[in-house]
Structure formats: structure tokens, C-alpha cells
Image (tube, rainbow, N blue to C red; front, side):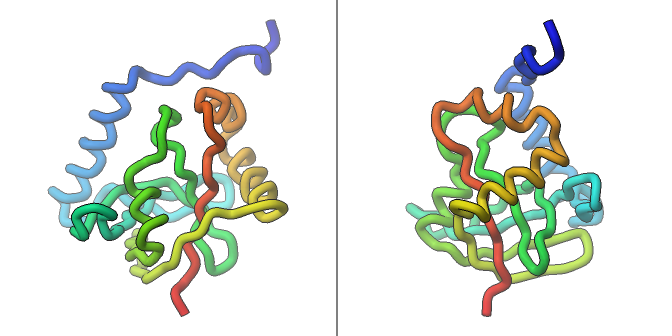
Length: 153
């Protein structure tokens, strides 16, 4: 069996959820000094995105991986490669404006799903950063949205 025939192994869902909670706690406990890092040409970064809750109207924050595409930040609505759309993405679909905190910056952005050629180009960039991207995406029954966060004009 060659490597491309193997399904990548994900940790159990409970472990992924605990890891997310720990990551957010590190960010919160350190007052934002730890938990975010800048994207590099060969590595994705971590950003904090604050959305408006689609049901509650309250601010909701999450830490997501990203890379830069010109002035835009690009992430994926992958829900830890589990089923269903992540709540932050559903919130952005209802209220597309959000605040992003990077390790060295803060931005107001507007979210949209990439489509067509743009989606294919951005997916390919993610594939360069994560060699198992396609195999992980196959674990979901629905297409994973590639989310573009553009500076608000």
C-alpha cells in the first residue's frame, strides 16, 4: 500500500475539542501574548476571529488557521474535519463582518466563500501547507468552504 492509499488518522473528536479549549484558554490566560502566530510562506498561522452570533447577537470568538493571500486572510470552514458547518462560519454567513486579531495586527474584515477558480487556487495553496488536505476533506460528506476574509472598505 502506498502512502496515497492511506486515510489520514485524526485524533478522537473529544481530543480535538479539548485541544481547542486548551488553545483558547492559553490565549485568554496570557492576555493574548500566546496562542496566535503569523503565517509563513511554508506554514499556516493562527488568528482569532470574533463574529456576531446568528441567534444571540453576542460576540463569539474562535482561533483558526489561516494564510495570507495579498490583503486577504484565508481559512477553511472544516469543523475539525467533522460533519456539519462550524458555528463561526454559520455566524459569518448571517453577519459577514468580523474582527480578526493576528499576532501583530487587528483588522475588521468581511467574509465570503471562495468560488470557482478562486476556490481552486486557494485550495491548492492549502494543499501546499497540508499534504493530507484532500484525504481529510473526504472525511466530510459536504464540501469544505474556503473562507476569504477581506479588509472592510
